[in-house]
Length: 131
Image 1 (cartoon, one colour):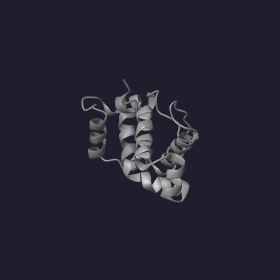
Image 2: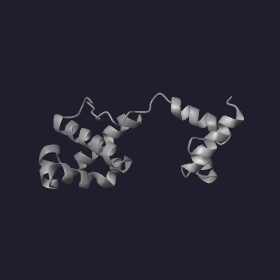
Image 3: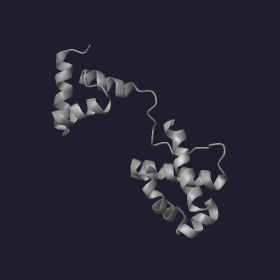
Image 4: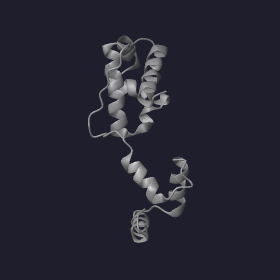
């Protein structure tokens, strides 16, 4: 257990950076750690072994996907790192296809029909998130 002055310093630094008490309580809820000390929650997050370093270019190779599909998957992952997790939302498929291929028709030539592209887009995320 950390001494009280260490905890106080942590809270002061968080406050200086714009985190208020309500936000910190919400952070507890998100992690299902309402009954845990904030310092312990941050220690857990800091030591969590599965946090990926997003500065390393994302590149995956899943079996069962064609090379062009894998190229698109890697493009989506790069956009996720660059623009944020919203890029993995299925409502972004059209935008991503246009960004990569300049037109939906060109994307369909490379990746197949829209249903197939959508299944690929959603399917590979199951591997990413373990579902």
